[in-house]
Amino acid sequence: MKDLLFYVNRLRLFAGRKLYINLISSVIISCLESVGIYLLVPMLSLIGIFSAGTSSIPFVSGFSEFIRWVPEKWSLLLILSIYALLIIGQAVMQKYQSIRSSEIQQGFIRLLRLDIYQALLESRWSFFVKKRRSDFNHVLTSELARVSQGTVQTMMLLTSLIFTVIQITFAFWLSAKLTALVIICGIGFVLFSRRFVKGAKVLGDRTSELSQSYFAGVNDHFNGIKDIKSNMLEKTNLNWFRSLCNRMEQNFIQFVRMQSSSQLLYKSSSAVLIVLFIFISFEVLHVRAEQLMLIILIFSRLWPRFTMIQNNLEQIVATFPAFKSLTDLQRDCQEAKEMALLERESQLKPFTIEEGITCHEVSFRYEGDKTGYALRNINFHIPANSTTAFVGKSGAGKSTLIDILIGLFQPESGQIVIDGVPLTPDNLFSYRNSISYVSQDPFLFNASIRENLMMVEPDATEAEIWEALKFSASDDFVSKLPQGMDTIIGDRGIRLSGGERQRIVLARAILRKPAILVLDEATSALDNENEAKIQGALDRLKGNMTIIVIAHRLSTIRNADQVIVLENGKIIQQGGYMQLSKETKGTFSQLLAYQTGSKA
Ligand SMILES: Nc1ncnc2c1ncn2[C@@H]1O[C@H](COP(=O)(O)OP(=O)(O)OP(=O)(O)O)[C@@H](O)[C@H]1O
View 1 (cartoon, rainbow, N blue to C red):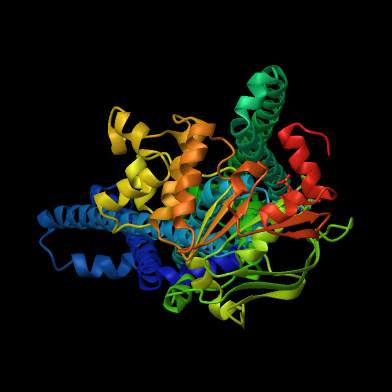
View 2: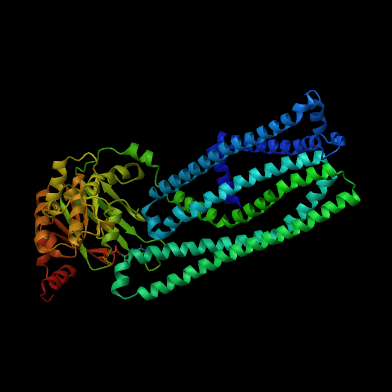
């Protein structure tokens, strides 16, 4: 409920004048409708259905006075024309009201989407390490749609309530006793329907859980489709999916069943109430026929509104979990926020490295990891424009150290110092903006090669792009593609081979002309020939750029200026390649022996 009110308030702040105009339109539409109903009495009495005694009804008496001034043969036409004008007026107002409503709704969805997307983009890397990606998809698609639906339902509820209050006021004016009777019955009904509202809440919670599992599952399955196929897991996954779909189907049917039962009870009890109402009005309260007719007309217009209020309430309650998911994610994002994008952009200053990067007494532990430190007391210096390679067995801490070096994680203790200045939130984004990072599993977008390259450097010239492609030994294969650089490469670059993907990502990294180039196993998918070409290109870059490499294949780091060997989160060896390869003991010589096939 608190979350819903928060979003309703946001809607109020966002839509402002439009929302108030809509609410005022609802008031006017309801008034026009009530006047239209009242006009039926003089109309029917002119036709001869009611006696002249109808003038005792409020408003009608005033109108009868007015009509007396009009020649008799025109009076019926006048009333009919006013009636038609009232209906046309209502229709025109309803048209603009529904256009405005959809403008408010769509604008509000856009606002929420942008808000959550920006908040996610601005969140720290550690936040993404903890969370499931599918949860973001789920909130951005399914839950956001439910939140917008819930907000609209709340607006509709408000409109229905305004309509109801106005109509009831008119009815009170007509006959206080009869209206009081109807309201008492209405209150009884609302109390009775509370259990349906509770049921809607339970089903709403379950819908949210199921749709979260659905998103997570589908996401996982299609990300891992190759493993599923190659391990013959299709049947297991299909069974899981089938069972989830069944549960979703049952949940939805249960919701509709509950809604239909509440409708059935509502309609049957309404019928009983109307019969009782008419009986009491005639036999006990001795109400006049025309008064009773007006009251019945007003309430027959109101019944669908009551049903709508009941439906709106159930649906709003069913969307409570979606409101909660959205506020939870927004709160988590807020906590994990690094800095507003705009602030960040204004802070980007040209960044160069004159002396080098120093890692001083850095220790790091993953959140909630009770097994210990991933890195402990790490110290080293990377001179500017040199090449440094990190090696070590799997799980030694190489990737974690790189994540700290590029500012994605903050060390638990110790610091990263650039040219004698510690890395702080003030210089972090300029520093990061000067880094090109190529990961083990590089990401390419489902777009053309040109678009993939230019997204990091929109002003790059054709010559610069080809130069980057040449550097990464990609120019040959790209020029042979059917559409050359404009060839679309599929999801994550699936239409390219692993080695081709790595080479395009390398070209993208180099196109930015970064101060620091970080290659995390970036050449692992290349054959010897292409690896040699890239090695040659990297050698040509030596002295112009600070290069940091993680390598499993030691042949790729022969020309590194220094090699740092990690084991269990600690530096155990450090020196030039030649120097370390001469040592007969230690991890480096073991790794070298495994790779050259000789015994350590
Ligand atoms: N997100 C995480 N949460 C908790 N622990 C993690 C996380 N990522 C890595 N670790 C742990 O931190 C340690 C260092 O991992 P890291 O990925 O840095 O090693 P690595 O040397 O890069 O390994 P590899 O060569 O296999 O990629 C390992 O013990 C690993 O289990």
